[in-house]
Image (cartoon, rainbow, N blue to C red; front, side, top):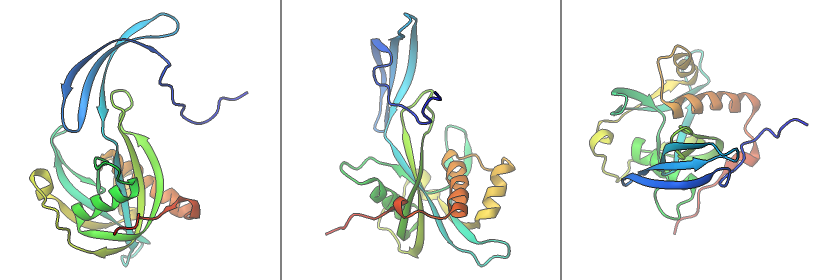
Length: 211
Protein backbone atom coordinates (compact mmCIF):
# COMPACT_ATOMS: atom_id res chain seq x y z
CA UNK A 1 0.00 0.00 0.00
CA UNK A 2 1.33 3.45 -0.89
CA UNK A 3 1.91 5.83 2.02
CA UNK A 4 -0.68 8.59 2.39
CA UNK A 5 0.36 11.73 0.51
CA UNK A 6 0.16 14.22 3.35
CA UNK A 7 2.35 15.53 6.13
CA UNK A 8 1.70 13.92 9.50
CA UNK A 9 1.89 15.61 12.91
CA UNK A 10 4.44 13.70 14.99
CA UNK A 11 4.95 15.48 18.32
CA UNK A 12 6.12 12.27 20.01
CA UNK A 13 8.21 10.78 17.18
CA UNK A 14 11.40 11.34 19.21
CA UNK A 15 12.04 11.52 22.94
CA UNK A 16 13.27 14.87 24.23
CA UNK A 17 16.14 14.16 26.64
CA UNK A 18 17.48 17.70 27.14
CA UNK A 19 16.54 21.28 26.20
CA UNK A 20 18.47 24.53 26.53
CA UNK A 21 17.00 27.92 25.72
CA UNK A 22 19.71 29.83 23.85
CA UNK A 23 17.82 33.02 22.93
CA UNK A 24 14.42 34.59 23.51
CA UNK A 25 13.12 37.52 21.46
CA UNK A 26 9.77 39.10 20.60
CA UNK A 27 9.23 36.99 17.46
CA UNK A 28 11.19 33.78 17.98
CA UNK A 29 13.01 31.66 20.57
CA UNK A 30 16.05 29.49 19.85
CA UNK A 31 16.22 26.07 21.52
CA UNK A 32 19.04 23.52 21.65
CA UNK A 33 17.44 20.07 22.04
CA UNK A 34 18.88 16.62 22.59
CA UNK A 35 16.55 14.02 21.07
CA UNK A 36 16.49 10.22 21.02
CA UNK A 37 15.11 8.20 18.11
CA UNK A 38 13.30 4.87 18.45
CA UNK A 39 16.46 3.01 17.33
CA UNK A 40 18.38 4.60 20.22
CA UNK A 41 20.32 7.18 18.17
CA UNK A 42 20.75 10.52 19.90
CA UNK A 43 21.29 13.90 18.25
CA UNK A 44 21.32 17.59 19.10
CA UNK A 45 19.07 19.85 17.07
CA UNK A 46 18.99 23.64 17.29
CA UNK A 47 15.67 25.09 16.18
CA UNK A 48 13.55 28.23 16.24
CA UNK A 49 10.06 28.51 17.72
CA UNK A 50 8.61 31.25 15.50
CA UNK A 51 5.29 33.06 15.19
CA UNK A 52 3.23 31.85 12.23
CA UNK A 53 2.67 34.23 9.34
CA UNK A 54 0.52 35.08 6.31
CA UNK A 55 1.29 36.35 2.82
CA UNK A 56 -0.96 37.83 0.16
CA UNK A 57 -1.00 37.55 -3.63
CA UNK A 58 -3.17 40.57 -4.45
CA UNK A 59 -4.40 40.64 -8.05
CA UNK A 60 -6.21 43.09 -10.34
CA UNK A 61 -7.18 42.77 -14.01
CA UNK A 62 -4.33 44.00 -16.18
CA UNK A 63 -4.48 46.48 -19.03
CA UNK A 64 -0.96 45.64 -20.21
CA UNK A 65 -0.58 43.73 -23.51
CA UNK A 66 -0.06 40.02 -22.96
CA UNK A 67 -1.10 40.14 -19.30
CA UNK A 68 -4.36 38.97 -17.73
CA UNK A 69 -3.51 39.98 -14.17
CA UNK A 70 -1.30 42.42 -12.30
CA UNK A 71 0.15 41.42 -8.92
CA UNK A 72 0.92 43.84 -6.09
CA UNK A 73 4.52 43.67 -4.86
CA UNK A 74 6.49 45.49 -2.20
CA UNK A 75 10.23 46.18 -2.17
CA UNK A 76 12.16 46.37 1.09
CA UNK A 77 15.53 45.68 2.71
CA UNK A 78 16.18 42.28 4.32
CA UNK A 79 19.15 42.31 6.66
CA UNK A 80 20.01 38.58 6.90
CA UNK A 81 20.71 38.11 3.16
CA UNK A 82 21.73 41.79 2.79
CA UNK A 83 19.33 42.30 -0.10
CA UNK A 84 16.65 44.74 -1.16
CA UNK A 85 13.98 42.28 -2.28
CA UNK A 86 10.70 42.30 -4.13
CA UNK A 87 8.12 40.41 -2.07
CA UNK A 88 4.40 39.94 -1.73
CA UNK A 89 2.81 41.63 1.32
CA UNK A 90 3.24 39.45 4.39
CA UNK A 91 3.37 39.57 8.17
CA UNK A 92 3.09 37.76 11.45
CA UNK A 93 0.02 36.25 13.08
CA UNK A 94 0.95 37.93 16.35
CA UNK A 95 -2.36 39.48 17.45
CA UNK A 96 -4.05 37.22 20.01
CA UNK A 97 -7.34 35.78 18.79
CA UNK A 98 -7.04 37.29 15.30
CA UNK A 99 -8.34 35.10 12.46
CA UNK A 100 -5.73 34.23 9.86
CA UNK A 101 -7.56 36.01 7.04
CA UNK A 102 -7.97 39.07 9.25
CA UNK A 103 -4.21 39.08 9.81
CA UNK A 104 -3.73 38.93 6.05
CA UNK A 105 -6.11 41.85 5.51
CA UNK A 106 -4.38 43.88 8.23
CA UNK A 107 -0.91 43.26 6.81
CA UNK A 108 -2.05 44.06 3.27
CA UNK A 109 -3.38 47.46 4.32
CA UNK A 110 -0.49 48.27 6.68
CA UNK A 111 2.13 47.56 4.01
CA UNK A 112 0.40 48.74 0.83
CA UNK A 113 -2.61 50.94 1.73
CA UNK A 114 -4.93 48.54 -0.11
CA UNK A 115 -7.94 46.58 1.11
CA UNK A 116 -9.49 43.58 -0.67
CA UNK A 117 -13.11 42.48 -0.82
CA UNK A 118 -12.57 38.86 -1.89
CA UNK A 119 -10.18 36.35 -0.32
CA UNK A 120 -9.11 32.77 -1.10
CA UNK A 121 -6.88 30.51 1.00
CA UNK A 122 -4.38 28.92 -1.40
CA UNK A 123 -1.46 27.10 0.22
CA UNK A 124 0.64 26.90 3.33
CA UNK A 125 4.26 25.93 3.83
CA UNK A 126 6.74 25.61 6.68
CA UNK A 127 9.26 28.28 5.80
CA UNK A 128 12.42 26.41 6.83
CA UNK A 129 11.53 23.04 8.37
CA UNK A 130 15.13 22.10 9.14
CA UNK A 131 15.42 24.91 11.68
CA UNK A 132 12.03 26.57 12.26
CA UNK A 133 8.39 25.72 13.02
CA UNK A 134 7.02 28.87 11.30
CA UNK A 135 3.97 28.01 9.19
CA UNK A 136 2.98 30.52 6.50
CA UNK A 137 -0.47 30.66 4.90
CA UNK A 138 -0.79 32.26 1.46
CA UNK A 139 -3.97 34.02 0.31
CA UNK A 140 -5.28 35.31 -3.00
CA UNK A 141 -6.94 38.73 -2.74
CA UNK A 142 -9.19 40.38 -5.34
CA UNK A 143 -11.31 43.52 -5.77
CA UNK A 144 -8.75 45.88 -4.31
CA UNK A 145 -9.40 49.46 -3.23
CA UNK A 146 -6.79 52.02 -2.24
CA UNK A 147 -7.44 52.89 1.41
CA UNK A 148 -4.56 54.55 3.31
CA UNK A 149 -3.74 52.93 6.63
CA UNK A 150 -3.24 54.76 9.92
CA UNK A 151 -0.38 52.36 10.67
CA UNK A 152 2.99 54.12 11.11
CA UNK A 153 5.69 52.36 9.11
CA UNK A 154 9.12 52.42 10.72
CA UNK A 155 12.64 51.14 9.98
CA UNK A 156 12.57 48.73 7.00
CA UNK A 157 8.84 49.28 6.53
CA UNK A 158 9.34 53.03 6.24
CA UNK A 159 11.33 52.34 3.05
CA UNK A 160 8.72 50.07 1.42
CA UNK A 161 8.06 50.69 -2.27
CA UNK A 162 4.68 49.46 -3.58
CA UNK A 163 4.25 48.59 -7.26
CA UNK A 164 2.03 46.59 -9.62
CA UNK A 165 3.65 44.15 -12.07
CA UNK A 166 2.19 41.79 -14.63
CA UNK A 167 1.73 38.29 -13.21
CA UNK A 168 3.40 36.73 -16.26
CA UNK A 169 6.32 39.17 -15.92
CA UNK A 170 6.82 38.21 -12.27
CA UNK A 171 6.55 34.50 -13.08
CA UNK A 172 9.24 34.84 -15.74
CA UNK A 173 11.48 36.73 -13.30
CA UNK A 174 11.12 33.84 -10.82
CA UNK A 175 12.31 31.31 -13.42
CA UNK A 176 15.12 33.66 -14.40
CA UNK A 177 16.22 33.44 -10.73
CA UNK A 178 15.89 37.21 -10.34
CA UNK A 179 13.40 36.98 -7.47
CA UNK A 180 14.10 34.85 -4.39
CA UNK A 181 11.61 35.72 -1.63
CA UNK A 182 10.13 32.33 -0.63
CA UNK A 183 6.62 33.68 -0.06
CA UNK A 184 6.69 35.44 -3.44
CA UNK A 185 8.01 32.39 -5.30
CA UNK A 186 5.54 29.96 -3.69
CA UNK A 187 2.64 32.41 -3.77
CA UNK A 188 3.00 33.53 -7.38
CA UNK A 189 3.49 29.99 -8.70
CA UNK A 190 0.49 28.79 -6.69
CA UNK A 191 -1.58 31.71 -8.01
CA UNK A 192 -0.81 30.66 -11.58
CA UNK A 193 -2.05 27.14 -10.84
CA UNK A 194 -5.14 28.37 -8.98
CA UNK A 195 -6.15 30.70 -11.81
CA UNK A 196 -5.53 28.01 -14.44
CA UNK A 197 -7.68 25.38 -12.71
CA UNK A 198 -10.31 27.88 -11.57
CA UNK A 199 -10.97 29.30 -8.12
CA UNK A 200 -12.89 26.93 -5.86
CA UNK A 201 -15.80 28.06 -3.72
CA UNK A 202 -14.52 25.96 -0.81
CA UNK A 203 -11.30 27.97 -0.74
CA UNK A 204 -13.02 31.35 -0.39
CA UNK A 205 -12.78 32.83 3.09
CA UNK A 206 -14.63 35.79 4.54
CA UNK A 207 -13.30 38.48 6.79
CA UNK A 208 -14.77 38.46 10.31
CA UNK A 209 -17.40 41.11 10.92
CA UNK A 210 -16.12 44.09 12.88
CA UNK A 211 -18.21 46.08 15.31
